Length: 268
Image (cartoon, rainbow, N blue to C red; front, top):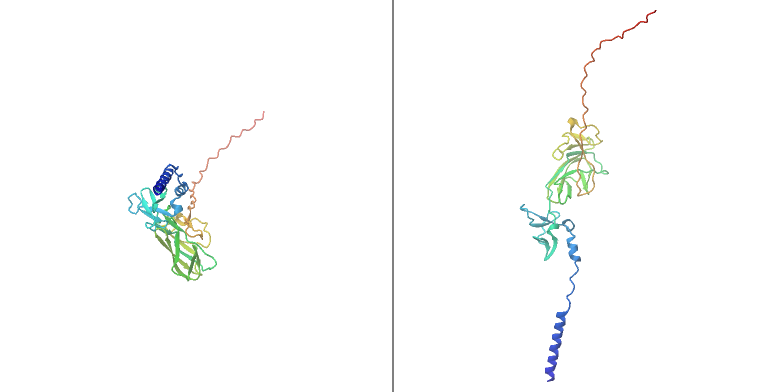
């Protein structure tokens, strides 16, 4: 009898616990701080972008800022980018990856004197203007002639070298020939493909050119830049206005001399 009462008491206690659990107020929902931190992110801040590889107007791939495939880490769904089962970036806050499609140096050839103490830079035109990243890597095929460090080019000794610029996003490339010669005149040849208005002849770069370009062509000058990965646009000066040639004036026609009448005072 005592054993039966014990089991009945235990059952009643269990039922009471179940009722208390059912009647307990629900715990408040988790703070939305994590959600708000997600919604404040962007493709640029996270370094992840969407790409439309088949050009049908719908993104179908997740890539990083250089275009590398991130499909193993993230999943692209209709409403955004997921990391596992969690929505990492809503579709409305994603950005489309835009690769660099074309690079062009503003000069095709440059002649300089060897000077290990002074560096120079070569300007680039990057297409398109809205590329996701415009980071550029510069290399030389002759390290004995040129040293490249942090975007700066140092002429070390006489010789020739080719400088190659490669876009980290898209792989577009451009080249420029550099001649280092201590007896030649420093000069550069403008790249008309990058600067259609630039002069096609070689121009001296040792001293500023303040004269108007021949044949009313624009003069393009380059400015040194020691920052890597930055876009440096050539500064193109508008061609100087040619003075208008004055038309020769016709010789003045002689005018007839008109004598005023002279009145003599009559003596009365």
